Length: 480
Image (cartoon, rainbow, N blue to C red; front, side, top):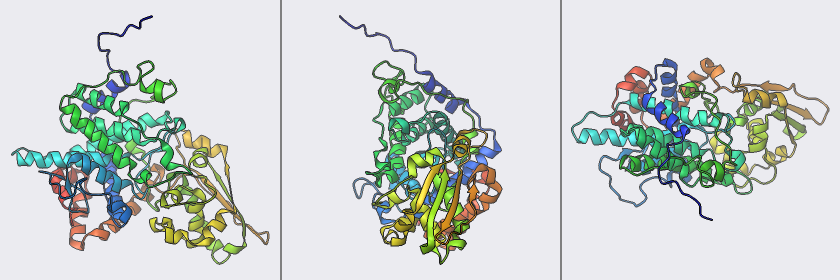
């Protein structure tokens, strides 16, 4: 029995068409969206600068082949590297993500939309320098901010009701998709080319979550986003060169994404694309902790004065949390490396209780050698609070709640402390933004002398003036 194979190419999947139309046609007139994009930009660049303090990160940077020169190469902030846009995207994306300190989106799927900045900045910078070399006008930072809003929106809307982690896929596939779409647009791509790039991103081999979970947790989770945003740039460049796409990459029977990788289910998209995601983005402001643990660490820091000097008398630490935290960061047993520790709820709470802080250095091997941490972890009981789980998924709340209470061997106890919204939540913007700006200033001071710090800060603090700057002029300020 023969199978008929259609001779004509079908119309592209509606999901691809809707994204392409949004990228091409949506006008961003939300002042809040562009202002928040500015904060996302400086926060991500600050995270990238801090990551350079860690040899495991900086050893991955630079060209693939040492000594390779690239005409009009994109700048890698905080370094002297000038790279092609694909490799620069990997460098910048890896730096931004390395310490798990950049912004976050939580829904049915979670992720970090600022991961797309690796591709956006690399593409825009290379394009701006190339234009100037050809006697044309450079690309402006306004275009970068607009690309950010759109990339955040694509990644975030696809994540609202579609859980990729439940089928074993890592959320960075959404970075690849969003980067491919907006970078094709930055490069001047038309509707067909954006659709083609999107199809390439979906047909590409998708990353497993293996590297985020015991017993295989490892450092790839810190460069996976860099890899994904670089792949997005590569697909954008290929599509602009005329490479064909695959119109029913999602819906093709047997061979499409839905049937092969998503258990036959189509994506659910509950709202149209706009600027919702960036306006409601979650910032990691106080400490580099997996976001489901942010409020738990805040609770621990609030209780820490009652524990100081009494940690040996702790009998039990009770943590009530939401289902997603249980699924991702409830870990018992040995933790083998920093990537393992920064995704362990009990480890983060223990460090905060013992030291009254939580920094990236607290995940390193030397800090983890403190035997008190594992002893305190062994005394923790973690359980789900159904209300927290419901409020986490409620689009009107999007809380990330945790509650913490400590019981001592003499029968005394602390009050239970509950925090529903972390400092970086949109409901705490007025409280959080000054701290975020301080975080940026601290990270600038890690790499640059005072006069250079002030130039960068001055050019970054007004969205209108920032938007008028040439991309390469802005990023040249970040060269040591």
